[in-house]
Image (tube, rainbow, N blue to C red; front, side, top):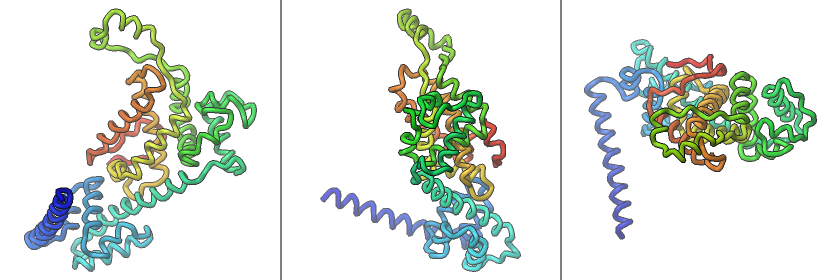
Length: 334
């Protein structure tokens, strides 16, 4: 009974707040002479802050036209903007900037949805060793990461040198499908120097420098043990697939909207997603060194701590994951 009453109260509060919000919107329109979309576009700076407010306004509207506008085909966006302006009785000749602003926001909103579909399609496609294109991508990955070391055969223990678990990498792509391979190859090709350095560090890890403050916290025995400990490396390719999973979940959950809406002036694309993966790989590598784990069994703990840090950064509406790598030089930071 208590559970039922609690649910009933929550439902009543929801509809009460929704009613109050609609009343407030009506009052604001009468006072300002502008609809909610106009107020957002004129009072909020371009980027994630504006686009996310527009997205919420369209999605929560009682108008079917506005609700469906967030999922139209990109080619229909211009016509959709005209229909919205007509519905809201806004003269485009008097308010030309509104149409431009709405179009930019819808391109990002629709583009984000389409990006999820593109990424999901790659994730669901399994690696096929009988597919020449798949095999070519895998061999290119080796070539980019180990340019001076020929691969002796397709099935080889050499794959362990770049972080795969066995002599045939295809089994490691089961979780993320082709998406994992696409991301790894992109990183290795577009930012070869950084990828090769991260690979080298993962195989031959170096202990981070310990500050005087940290030293003072150790007892003599603990300090001697810490000084003799070896830094722990990790399997480059396996971690790359794992970070692909992290990037995928950030995308699907909507957490990456802040980043993409701030750096992509129009629709975010697969290249933006792959550039984000490169950034996450680069940052995770630094984070791993900073955490200085005792052994590889701490990977999940370190990964979860890293995930929480990234999510916290993305909660800032002005946040754009800073491009510290060559692959992202083309990004526009608004």
